[in-house]
Amino acid sequence: MRGRGTVSEKAERSLRAATAANVRWSRRTLDQRREDTQAARDAGLRQFEDQVDPSVTDPDDRAAMAENLRRAHMQRMTLKSIQARKAAKLERLARQWAALEDEFGGDAA
Image (cartoon, rainbow, N blue to C red; front, side):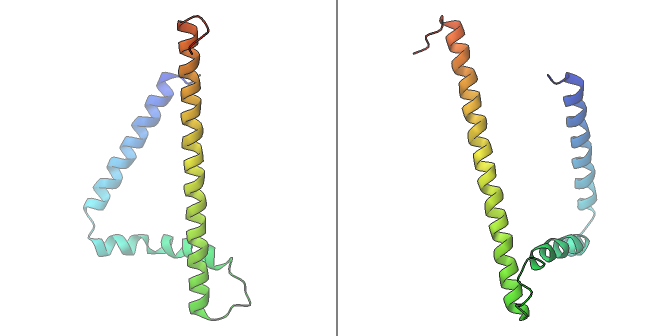
């Protein structure tokens, strides 16, 4: 079981970080923001370019293949998110059902 202090401290830390990020971005123009994050975007795309078959040498083909790998990755993450939300909902419904059974003597139907 989680302690109340731990959750509160996490939430507080998260809120402080989000506030600091918003203050930082409030002082940057859109061009500066793009510049600040370009290295991270390049590294992310490079990760997918590294997975492209090395025998493909045309830069346009490699870029297109890397983009397809990136999209497939995002789709897999979306699917996992959907599955996790569905599992959480089923778990929540099971707890509610159990509570109803407890309340009404074991036969909620």
